[in-house]
Image 1: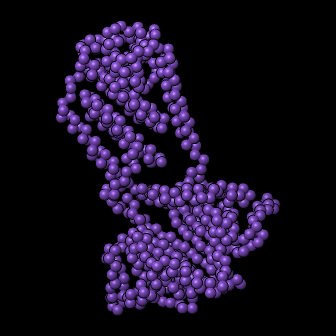
Image 2: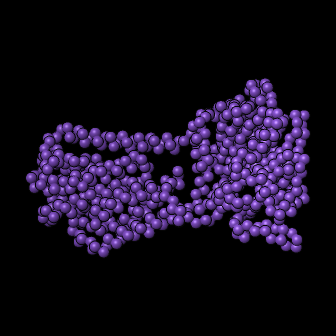
Length: 588
C-alpha cells in the first residue's frame, strides 16, 4: 500500500510539473481542463496496469515446496514449507487516515450547509432555466451547480457582465470538476498535490469564463470592472467566485495574452511517452510482494472460513514469556487436520528456549506472526482433552489423553536476508494431521490411492530412459517413496545424492506439469539437486551417461536433507517418504 501511495504522489507531481512547464501559460483552456481532470485519476490507476509485453525477465525465484510424510503407528504427519507473507497488527495508520477523511467530509458538509443558508435568505429568479439567488445587502457574486448567486447592491452593468461570466460556469458544469477534487480531498486529505490540482482547476475555470465573456462585451471595460470591483467572498472553496482577489491579477494577465499558436497543441503529445514510461515501470518493476499478496489472499479466505482469534491458540498462560518482533512481517502458518488436537512449541535451536506455544483444535488454521530472527525446531504433542496448569509460576499445557509426541527434525530458518532486489522475510506453512490406522488391505489400497490418485501421475520405471536407469539404486525391502510434482513453468532434472558418499542413487527428468513417484529408495540421508531448463539431452562420455539441459535456467541444491532411514519404535515401523512440488517463477 505504501508503495502504491508513493507512486501516485510521484506521478501526480510529474504531471503537475509538465503542466506548469508546458501548458499553464497557453490559452488552450479546455485542453488544460481535460489535462487537469485526467491526470490525477490516471495517477491512481496507472500503478495497477501491468502490460505483459513490457515485462522483461530479470531474475528468477525458485519455489520448492517440501512435504514430509511420517508413518508413526500407522499414523502420519505432514509438514509443508514455503515462504512469504505480510501481517498487520493494530493499524494505527488506518485509524489516523479515517479520522482525517472524516474531518474532510465534515468540512465539505459544512460548506454545503453555508450554501443552503445563503440560498434560504435570498430572493429567487430565473434566467434561461438557470436559477438566480439575489443576496440581500451584498456585493458577492459566484455560482454553484445550476444556481448563480448575486448581491443586490451590484449595479446593473456589473450584474450583466457577471451573469454572462457565471452562466459559463453553470453551462460547462465547472461545479462537477470542483466536486471531483472535493472527493479526492476526502480520500487523499494528506496529499498536498490534490489541493494544488484544485487550485489550478479553479484558475482555469475563470480563464474559460473570461474568454467567453470578452467575445460579447468590450475587453477594456471588463478589465476595468475587475480592477474596480469590491472583493467580498465567502470561504467556500469549490464555488466559482467572480470577485476573487487572489485570482484577478492572473485573470487580467491572461485576458491580455495573445492566443497561443495551434502548433503549441503538439506539446500535449509529450504526455504519451511519459505515460508509456510509467507503464513500463509499473509492468517491469520488481513486484517482490506478489508471493506475499497471494499468501495474504490465502489468509483472507482461511479466516473467512474459520474465524480464529489469537487467544484461541496462543493462550496467555502458555505465552507469558513469548517472544515477538513486530518489525518482522513473517509468519508460521499452521493448519491442523480433523483427527486430533495438537500442541506446538517453537524452540530456538541455539538457546533451547521456547519462543512461542500454541494449542490447536481439530480443523483449525492459524498464523503465528512476528517471529524473531533465529533458527527453530518444532515440537508437537498430539492428543485429546487439553488442560493447562500453573506450578511454581510456570504454565504447562498438556493432554489428558496423549497420542504421540514428536521432536521436530526440520530446522526453520527465520533469519532475514537483504538482497539487491529487497528484503526477504522468511515464513513457513505447516499442515498437521494424524491419520487413523487401517487394516493391511486398507493400507495397501490407501497407499496406491495416495500415489496414483491422478491419471497424470507417471510410474517411475516407464519414465526412466536407459541412461537414467544406469544410476538408479533400489531397495525393494523398503516400501517408501519420493513424490515429485512439476508446475507448468519449467522442465526439471531432479537428482537424489547421498550425503555420506556423494553418490547419485536416482535421477529423473520431468517435463512441465507432470508428476512421478520414485519408489524403494535405499536408507540414507540425501540432498536433492534440481536443475531448471529447456531442451533436455542425454550424453554418453567415456561410457558414462550424463543428462543436462542445453538451455539451463538455474540450478540449486535443496537445503533440506531428506532422511530416509527407517526406524522401529514400540508402536511400529517408521518408513519415511517425501513429496516435492517444484516451480520456477519470474520476477520482473
